Image 1 (cartoon, rainbow, N blue to C red):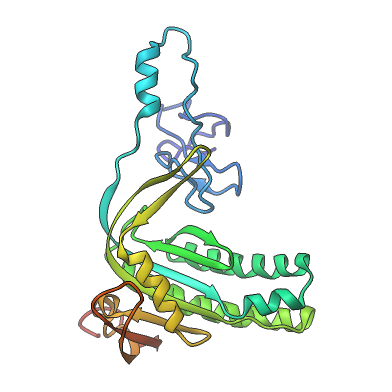
Image 2 (cartoon, rainbow, N blue to C red):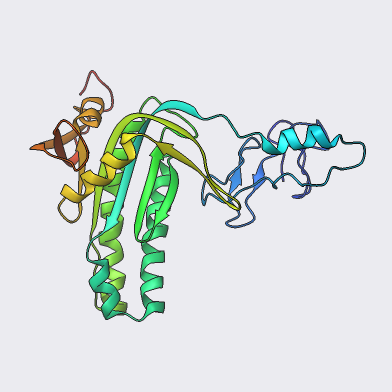
Length: 270
């Protein structure tokens, strides 16, 4: 593992550079993604990178101190997040036509296409929910154009899914379609779950609205909320879909279908 501070080549098992003492990037044991030293969970697949605190203190350690460390929960934080929810269309019907192993291969190809696209725009895959994917833009790394990154990623996921269909038609005589919903809002994000199953999840209405929005999208289209629309207006050609009532969300929201990029590179051009 090469130190980003001094360039010294270290063993993959080391946590600190043997030359300058700087923290080393962390290699994920599950997917081999190289994560920044401060990450506790893999930014690619979500696997825990740090070992849970042992219940037995090491030599010279105070039991009471160790117990306080073990009980400490990472602080949650408030931040604005753009949440993208992608879902396959007709996956239940597809499951009746394909052998389970074939279905697994198809879903894996789709998930890989999503992950490759999200990585290019520096997003974070928060959860794989069956054949659905929930993605955060603005966590763990925030950018001033996270909303634009999310919309561009959504359009590219639609394109990638359609390209994937060429192979699926050839190998399985089937095709896929995807619906994408995107919303921007305030959330509280922190560690959730218990035991060995812990995840960094965002709580608030934003994830729910993004999931509801994708239900209004036509196959192979991207739908965004008015909140996201205001942040990306001028950078994309959009079409209002009118006011919609989202289950559990008050008041009704105006939603927009994203057609394509406008070609504008900044606010002056937009």
